[in-house]
Length: 159
Image (cartoon, rainbow, N blue to C red; front, side, top):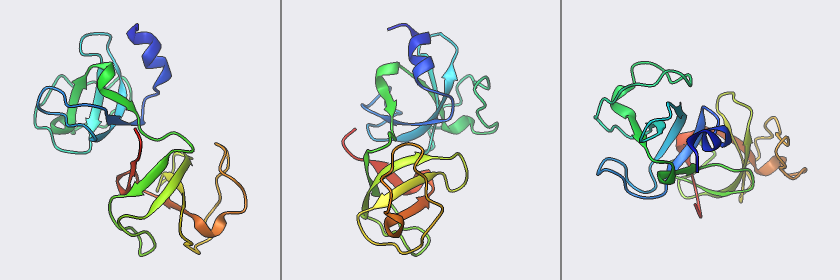
């Protein structure tokens, strides 16, 4: 598949997950943020959540924040997949804000680009009544289960 077609499908700033091990640096299940491509091989520039320590040629065309060289790594397209798609089940990988506990399960329903960015309807009652986000299909009337969390709190299931 041509790199420009895939690049159009993945917007800069999209959260991605590694679907397989790559170059002994990237492990299946690692999370990161895709920032673009320069059309070379490997084509996809990702800032990973985990420290890589490789200091590659740094890509700034997609708005990647400066000074994160040790977290950056270029990968092939088949190594990454968009991590969070509205309706995808997620699991909390760490506790957050006294409301979300590590191991809690829920469904991701989108982002408004603010902080915290991820809108999740949890399988348990949270009772916080946050600003409700339904732009990407979240079912109405679930305010008691809704909570916004940072990206590093959740991991997609069934990727």
